[in-house]
Image: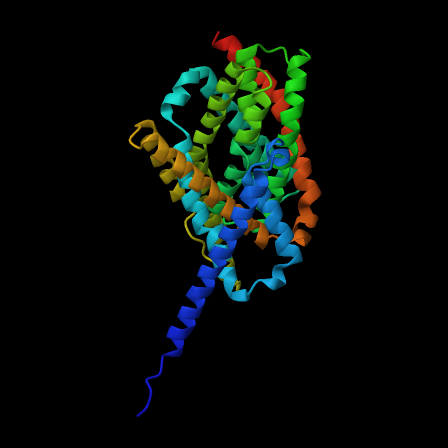
Length: 366
């Protein structure tokens, strides 16, 4: 009696699925360790979120111990860095409500819009024209400074479909200059060099510091009122992630079509290097907006929202850890100094230009 044979394709598919699940589980366990490390007071006091610790730890592992991970797990790592990332960014909208944004009114909205638009424009231009960076690296660096630090870098990375090492360079800029702001801003304010009252400090801190945790850490050294205003202004910047991503997605798609048209013309002359590209519409941004509306309607109990935010932070940490694992330091070394120089240009703009915008907003809306 002959035994039934299992098709080779079924065996291969089962092995691939098991490898992917193992890879996701590995990233989850790695992210859990990263979360515990980020909770250490010395690290938490620096405003380093689990997302930032995750990409650093992942990069260290990916470059020093990557050979110890089975090759079949790579699909799970990639899933965490791509698909899980999109889901997590969408649920990030549960941290924002339209009521909070309304509390700071037109001054807070004007501050956020001016900072985001100007920083993206200056960062993209300086990165590409002055520092000779590629478009994706320049945009990622600008987005991290303009909107919401590492979370914005993740969102843009998904839209641009860029390489992991480019995100790592952008996050490095967020870590360096955002952490510096936590200590520098309160010193400048208390020394009287910023010429701002408490409301102005809230607008300036929330409008120009990179990460949410860094905003809270810096503003808490001024006053509770400044912390409240700064946090809301910062979340207004986060809210702007949606329209910015939609515009960038359309721009990237238009540029891709232009490239394909040029390539198609070249094909008439014997050039066959035409590579079609998927439509770069960030659908997860619409999910982000839906979560903002859901949070604004107070449909979910507060405990449920807190739990979802905790799970979302863990999912984002998994995504950042996976990106770190896929990052190669040799690729960072190639453009690292230029990316950090772009971050420095943006940091100077955020301080000087941010002060000018804050003074103007307070004058116009007083």
